[in-house]
Length: 339
Image (tube, rainbow, N blue to C red; front, top):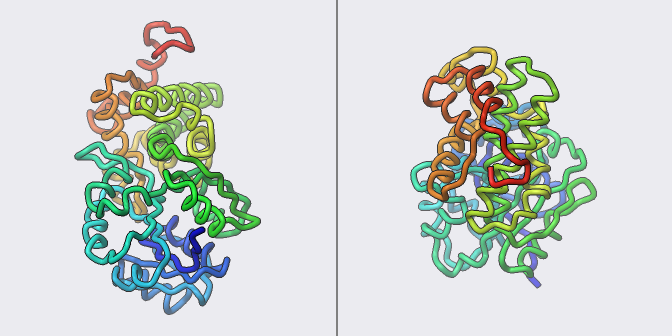
């Protein structure tokens, strides 16, 4: 049995900070790496990450550093929580620091745009082969603010090494955070990434004022698209009916705290994407994932009409109202058919 007492958390956005707070409060020796010097200074001076998680007090036991080597040294595992578009760069800097086969848990929800690779596939590209079987994924319906407040939350932890998954499951779990074990790395990662695209679409629906019926239809058909792509990529379709699929999908498509949903609402109300993103500190992963999801759909020959229409709204200048009407006027299909 693996003993997990010391954790390095790589990435001090809202989610990384909330997870680091949770682990430190549980009693694990936790060191948080932040890219931004101002985040390190803010936490050291005020015990608060004012840039990404304002209003949340962090425990004195949580150490913070601007140096990757400090975050990696003497830990029993790494929790990787950086935005997907910088994941490869950060991993390339971590790779030479790993003198042993350290378990690594990805909590990044996204797909690499250029390669269309999931985060564990990027990790396999960059990290030593001795680590490949020690990669895991943490995902599920979880707003960082609510986790940091100790609100009851359930997540899924997937990995190939069941003993390692069980060890981290035990290390992370508290009365307020329940962890379920899984082995479907592809399905858990796809669910966490694709739900952000669907949240953009749900936001557009809400921004247009189209009502609850429309949003419920969008969520249901969005799930069907996720299952289709996942099946084509070798995932277990049942994964998408769990926490990392429908759980996270419902949360981000309906919750006011979802950045992706908020971006969609503003698009639906007529704002330009550049204006919306220009005023945001945090990353709305769904915008990048929409491009990647469209590429994956093409690569695997899967029809994903919602992804296609959101891609057209984001990158091809299509109006939100026209995108919705095109979805509604598609040729009639059987509900349980392939499209």
